[in-house]
Length: 244
Image (tube, rainbow, N blue to C red; front, side, top):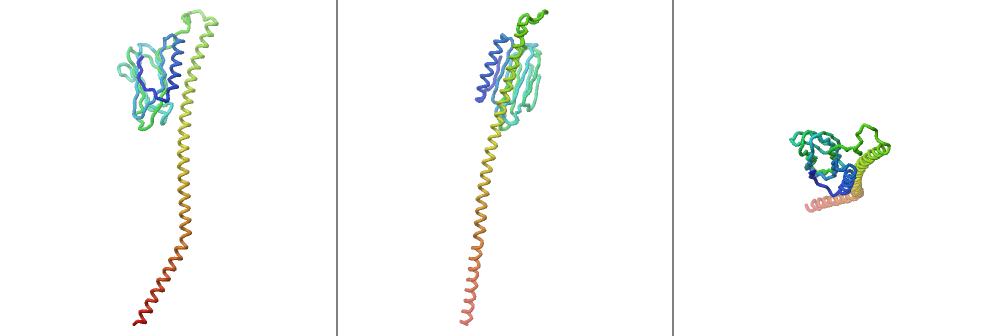
């Protein structure tokens, strides 16, 4: 298997979970099924591709989900070795696609965030190659399974369902935490803006009130100045007439 991708700093826990689940699958299925689970950071205006060698007739499933970033959407594209597009979706939040390899070769699937100008995304995908083999070599026999074998098969299927549910619940929890943190940031910025507006309005009210208090004093001074000017002008006129 050849996979190329970038694992972001916020995805360390997911990489540990993925490694643990991969180990459990290898132990349970004996390496017959290959499954890759990766959570990676996808920067804005970026595109990340992964490659997988698949034999003809192998059934594969690609499942992905955007955990954080923007509107939680991403472009996904899957191509066969000849470059034929098997799957293409634009701005999807999550999806699942199952196909059967038509020929041997390297299949490529890419995630693109080129439509985003400043928003980073965190993307999770699970790529399974092959189907689960029988738990017992004689499971496909004509005769019925024993009670012990039936119980083991039921437990095995239940454990796989538990693993899938745990993965989806962790994805939901990560997405919910991201939304809550984003909402908290917006509320904090809004509160700061309200505080600044309140401060500006308070200062403006003080200045307006001070102006209203100063207007009567200004008018009184203006009246006194006009009265003095008129009185002085009249005295000058009287003095001038007397001098004539």
